[in-house]
Image (cartoon, rainbow over all chains, first blue to last red; front, side, top):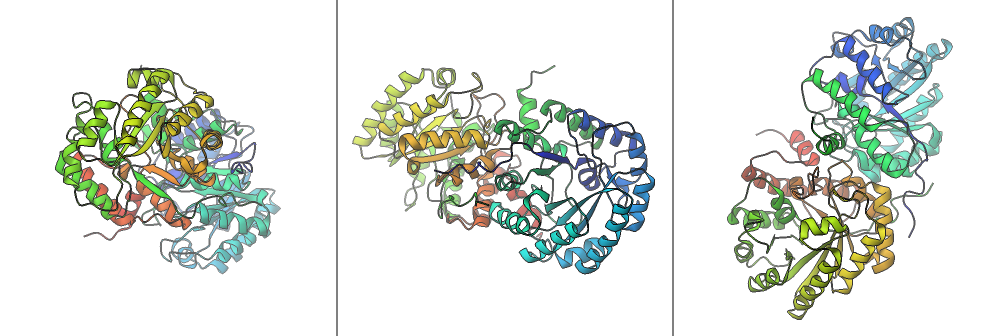
Length: 308
Length: 308
């Protein structure tokens, strides 16, 4: 009998996306001070890469307004990567002016999703990204890339593996040190994830890949496990399972960081995050948002925790 | 790069435990007619093994009272295994009189859990089971075994792998055709599940093993995936994630059958269950119980379903 876990890395980097991908998709809006507190709490729990916000149009994504103030409020936070999402040259310029040291770029593997979510087709988007990436690199910024819809599209349904590989390769060629493969609508299952990771690893190397799973259909952790088994060593997750995708009908909830941390702890995989401090960080954000969290590990741990 | 999914069986038997392990741990009690309807709906969705009830003391487990009437109400349901749980000779006798063709026996791998949940230590329990199993076999009944606490105990914490193997072997030696390894409190992660499955497979053969995961800490589907990767071809699950364990503090919720079915569908693994009919079966039970279900796949599918 072979050990299916033989390929799981000894150490994994968790990219905490709650303060951006999470909060961006919540109905309630957290003020700048609460977002600063959340990022600081997450860093205090041991996270070393936290997506801190996005430089997007405040009228379209009001939850991300004031990302410059968030970064300013995080001054002095050492040893923590704080990527911010930028969709275009204007966003990049704002990020640079705000002192960002790393930016995240994104493109979809689905033509329809790209047009509806980003306002341009894949080719146009990739051409724009090359320009943004070039400017960012010249300015000395780190670059992270996202490919969305790697396991399905809310408009097109199935997405060709070739499209995922093409976008992944383009992001790497543009200068992204790391590309996060996003199952935006949470439609994927382990077989598809294995195919996507396998094909993209062949194109750009397993070391450049991250996995970004949504839990819409309850598959997120199983999908992440599959990616880990194939050697992926960077995993995106959102504290308390914050977020979803307002542009993707039916999609709800990132993989909860707590559930991931619990699994990695149980498997002896190093990651540096303290589960109980992480749960408390999530509780702080949930208090501001006014709803219960989506992490089962957090709920399970709270029930087991002595009252008082 | 090796394919971690290479060992996943082409076909899996789903053992639906909602009408027993699920309902037994719900606050509300479903009347006999509703339980008959649920089992019939589940069979209609394609399930071919459905745990239909338990012959236990009605004063201790009122939700299972009238299991004889449930079996009577299921007369004429052909081609479906309907195991019922029996804890002792009296329960077995009642099951035989009610026309049961298969019974399920259980023992814990934790001494303290065995004493608190079953009122006797492991050795005493196994001796009693041998007797019950002998009578059942002589009566021509099929036998299924459960080992609880394979990945941890609510009282003792860690449970020795050797204890899990010992109980598994004893159940097989008593005549159980299949032994279901139960993570009763949902504390396990894939590494532990791989160890448990590996050790038990060495003792009794992989073909006799089933996996029974609870989702307390959000790990159930990842744990089941690991078992599948190691060749386990029988998986327990509970429609709508019904149930938990009233004897295990902090434990809540079986793996939802819908989430499992969605994963198997996406992986091309045959199982015979129609996801949409399964979701409707769960909705029927939930209406009687008066709360929302725990299946994320069911929720995701409902959101994607056109209204009206």
